[in-house]
Length: 150
Image (cartoon, rainbow, N blue to C red; front, side, top):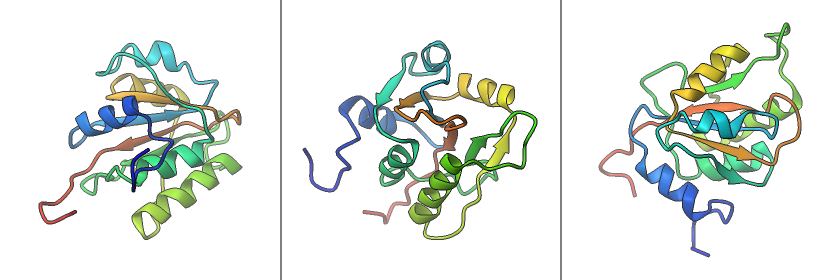
């Protein structure tokens, strides 16, 4: 255990978050997402796991991970097939965690399912969660930490 670091963040995840650079994508996926096969195509090349809900994982990750302020798609959600404007409970819960982490409203963009898969293949890494609800899949683009930040 370390002080100030969410205990869900295991050593493998911390190493990956630290290694990522500005503009790299992080995928946080539910249990139905093809995490292993997609992760093999990412920069890291293997899937990471945190067995908790999507909202809990996003809260833990965003406690350390800055979102990119230079782009409009730094926070994204997989849209529901044939219902692109519908936002399920799992995505509403994650949206609350994103807003809390950023200290303001930070709307996630919707990404069509197959476009999301393609974005995920180009990501730095994939964290598969224990989230069992459908459409618990998210992409977060890493921002920068200013020189005067703690």
